[in-house]
Length: 374
Image (cartoon, rainbow, N blue to C red):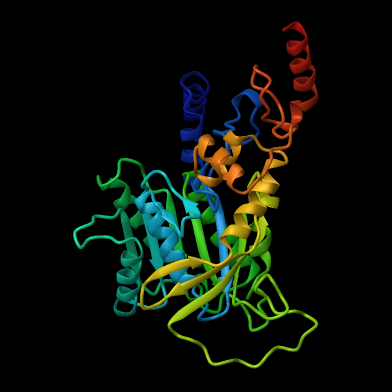
């Protein structure tokens, strides 16, 4: 029996399909075509931080300088590591191991960011959080830089603080971690490496800088490859999404109130998310002295999102989106006077309940037949 025959036997008879694919990927081999019954479709869609970060997804968060990319990325990282919520909107139910790669500020400057984020979550001095920080000037477009991150991942996975392996990596930020080598070819090599992280079930949040006109810097291949693209902008007069109105000339910079950071979060692309139309602009304000977040349009956001989801989702599906229970969803719909569409939720689970659009017609007939028998 040669090595290929051994691997095929391990895959087909012992169910080691995912392991074999990862082994071949690391050795540079090709997986080849797979038959339908052998294809690993994985589990149903799951959120790492509902409804922002999905398991195994790549997310690009970009903006101009000084708009709070690191502040919000730190909040996201700690929410995932602690299994907590961030400004009562994005929620994680299980603590996960997190690696935060910081390539710009350095140890001394970043220490203050860590202290502030711990205050946001009201952590005690002895709180042991499963988050690791790699603070080095490295180039992730080189094999040496990527290997350094891989070595840290291996060390983290060996740690016993949380049973599961590493699930989330933040790269802050890729602009400073690639130097001047931001070409389509260099990005392709880097993103191939990121795809390898995805195959291990690791979600990756990449921070990046925008140009002065708020367009993405460098290679536009990022917009093609990345699963989720999120823009972080300063609120502008005449525009509700944080980007300047194109018909207006760029306004002169006004003196900033440095005691707070105001920002709009705009969801530009959500490729793998099952509810893309439910995402609307989020308006936030961060108090620097108090280290606290405030969502300025919470009521409006909840009403709009619930109304959109109620058109086609069951309470159980909406519960996954909000990180709540179905009972809590019913209470929220009652609070905001949102009535669920009678045809919401598609497909059926054997009891006339809706779940998948592909089976909507068959389930409708099955449900009517059941009702007539009763």
